[in-house]
Image (tube, rainbow, N blue to C red):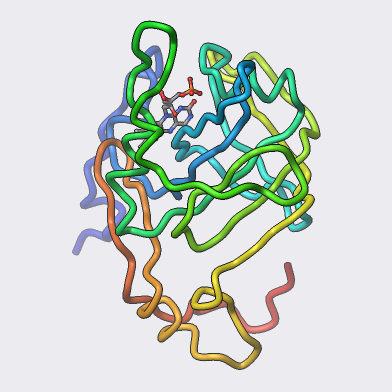
Length: 203
Ligand SMILES: Cc1cc2nc3c(=O)[nH]c(=O)nc-3n(C[C@H](O)[C@H](O)[C@H](O)COP(=O)(O)O)c2cc1C
């Protein structure tokens, strides 16, 4: 009998092209907020976004072509909103193309409120909010850059806050999470199971 490893046919991918559209992978979807040069606010969805390590650093990938990049380079701050699944369309609209005059008119339909510690806005109705000061920008990953901020303020909606010895399964069921399945799909996560960590595992 063949082992599962022998049975599975592997397809070699052409690494002269980006490989990331050839299969699905799971990502978060956040809205990064910045201040435009004219004083208005900007919001843009990002899925290549993650905590950077176990301390309070947050990073995301951005191209220098985007206003988000130049705004952060100028002001040194940004905000992060984690939207809920019912905010999917609003989140996507924040990627609308700019019209003449370089405005992103779709932003007017996203309800916002001011950040506390940095100059910027957050999107109302999200479940988690970060306010970040720029730590560093690292250019040169092809056409992309990594933008890393130090978290200087963080707030969680009451229905999404984990409590010690709380029922985590019920928490996620009652306040579902939004996942972006690159390329071009999404999922609302309502069901979850405890992760089977190996006995004695250390971080
Ligand atoms: C679902 C989704 C995910 C995205 N993820 C990223 C990302 O991780 N990095 C990035 O640079 N752009 C990403 N974009 C594209 C930009 O956020 C988008 O083009 C935005 O309008 C740029 O706005 P700005 O010029 O105001 O910064 C994504 C767009 C969508 C719809």
